[in-house]
Image (cartoon, rainbow, N blue to C red; front, side):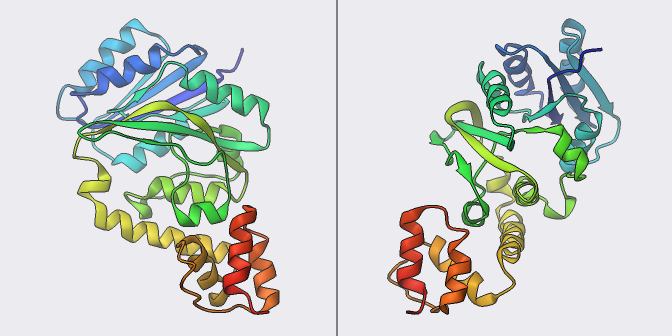
Length: 281
């Protein structure tokens, strides 16, 4: 039996207002070899009813109806466990994937075997409008600076081999933590075009849970710094670099420490700036 190329995963909780648009944006993709795993996580509105209506019309939808709410992170991990595709694409129940999103992410992973996860650019809409496109190839330094990827498709084989799942301890920053662990096993890249519409409706986690998100993001950042080096001096040098404040000399690293740190700075201009400002002669 031929294996499904892509599993699109989407947890949903009380999403009746937007979930129809989200589902249709996947069903109308130019790439059609996918299963669509949708989990209704104990919704108290019409979310389950709407999903059932679409599932009756399209057999690619694999509908799971949780009678009790288990939470967003637990539902995501449940999706991972159920998914059978070669690749897994994450979708949110209030957003919209543009028609060629799956096609272009599949094409990129097919052509780049060293890449384990590929994101894409997105456009915020509704109450705010702005575009975000992260650099094509990112490393640990990039992730320390910011959560430098989003809207991902990844290889399920890597998830299963290294038992990679979302960690409930990083509520509101679960994506960031997931990427920080994923990058230890495979490359993370980003497509340089907008293939996703992110609904900014005022109830986004970055607004309603900003303090929790910031706190957990700082823990992720510290874990990434520890991945680079156990030296507090090197970590301080890295943080000075990514803060883009060359006027602050800060701590001066010994040459040997500076050379180690420079190994992780792939941009030539940034590497030279770091060496000039933070490494002892």
